[in-house]
Image 1 (cartoon, helix red, strand yellow):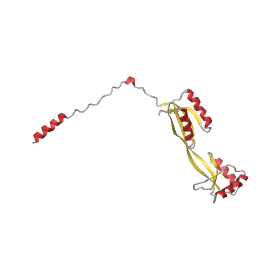
Image 2 (cartoon, rainbow, N blue to C red):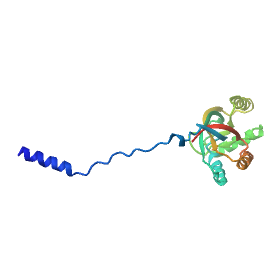
Image 3 (tube, one colour):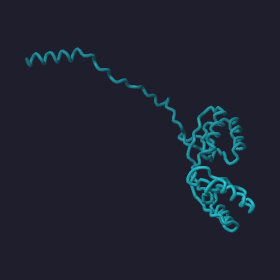
Image 4 (cartoon, rainbow, N blue to C red):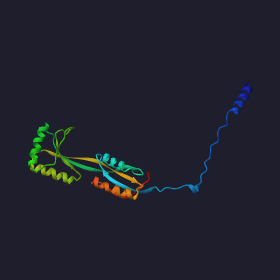
Amino acid sequence: MLLVANILFAGAMNFQPQQQKPVSLAVNPEEIILLRSSVDCIVWGDFTEEDLPRADAVLDQLKLPRSYKQVFSKSISMYQVYTASFGNRQAAEREINKLRNLGFISHRVSEAGERLNAIFFGDFENQAAAEKLLEQLKEKSEVSAMIHQYKIELRKYLIFDIEPQITATLNDLTDQFPDSNMEQQTCERL
């Protein structure tokens, strides 16, 4: 019986289709083209989160022949000068009128969050400028003001394989985005 089982097993193995042999690809070393790891590109930035949708729309309208990508540029500290929250919007508006008479004209009232009805005097990239405004507020008014520091991540665009006529068009974009700058650099290939 064991002999019959072995014969049947051997017969079954012979009737199975043969496994395919792996196909070897012919490699012609003379036809291999090595690409540079870096290419010329235009770097356009730096943009805040609020500016990115508008910049994306402008780049999409240009219908660039090659791709571009958006990357992290840098993180910067910003400083806000603001007052303590007032009981209601009317109290905040009364204080704004007093501050206006003292020469403080740049402001907005917070409409939500933990600082509801607080008066904000702007965002400063320079801590010294924020501290100067805070000192002026303390000297001229009785309002309780403070400085809040926060971080903003800026982003930039890497635009690849640019033709000369498109470069001229891209340079015009700095007029639409005056806080941005554009320069030609070498970037890592996509």
